[in-house]
Length: 455
Image 1 (spheres, rainbow, N blue to C red):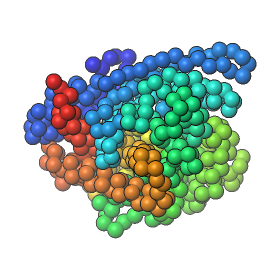
Image 2 (cartoon, rainbow, N blue to C red):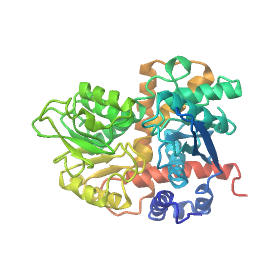
Image 3 (tube, helix red, strand yellow):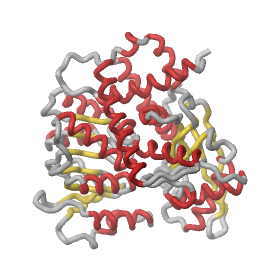
Image 4 (cartoon, one colour):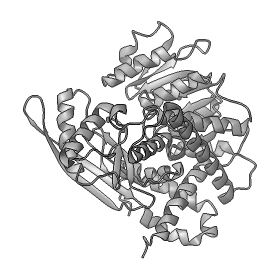
């Protein structure tokens, strides 16, 4: 079932297995144990070549993928990633996580993931359009509003979604809600770009309030990695709620606030970051544009070891971006809350560090995995699907209120499930890792049992 050549998928599978085995789930519901090998195997994996012509007239060939992992709760739902590192292991891991993440939203969505080993950096708009049209030429055979509804991910933003949707509409002669993250004037939802970042903050708000009722982000120091949509909107929401953002980063390095006495990132500085990221430029190009001396730029570094004393850490870049060593550094820096805006943002070693600290509450560190903390993005994608199906458009306030309600409900579900199936004898905080994994797993596999997926 798990191949040695699929390390990312193996990590995700082992994390889930460890959680389930270290709980009382199989004692209380032994019929679910037989389901694990089935739910851990994709229903369908589609791989295809993508042939397109660059601006010099040369033919280029990339590999395209769609992993349709599980449809027990609804149409396959998950993003498309365009990045040179894309391979089947990464997409299987992302699709696997997506099954349980989508289940935690309470919406009717299955799990899937897709993409290509195409790098949009350094490509012209014309080349990106040609690639998107070639990619959709094959993908359009396998998706649809009641079958599989992709969205964006790394390397696939509003521009790419537009090209993909236009290609689908022309190939299929149908205007339908087959992609989410669309433009507002052609079927998109308000709050969708902000959703993952905002949802992350709404989830952490509940963590803070659970530990210290009535407490909030006000006055908290927050370290954030990444500089894409998730990091940008998480940072803006932190600032709105009275917190101070002390770091942002990309794959080439990190900006760290130089002095704890200084003001953190401002909305204007985050707007500058958004502008250069739309152009696929490196964060370092802003070094000369920021106020002299306000930030230190650390080439090739992630922020965790360099940020100093922080209250909250939000990994929002990519998988395995917090190592065991960095987890120890965050604990030593006094970090009380870690929540992933990225998928599987922490290594197993880092999670072990955080989980060992959790039982030391209220002095310890409380960790929330991405499948729970960052489910706001796919939640609003689900709300976009609902609006498309009903041919309506909700207001910004209505979508934001629904998003917040989903994140609050998700948090409470994780807490209650962790308490119900905990095998620990401790007064520490409930394990959100266990809560998220078990709650998502139970919902999906019970639906599979009801539908006869094992006979």
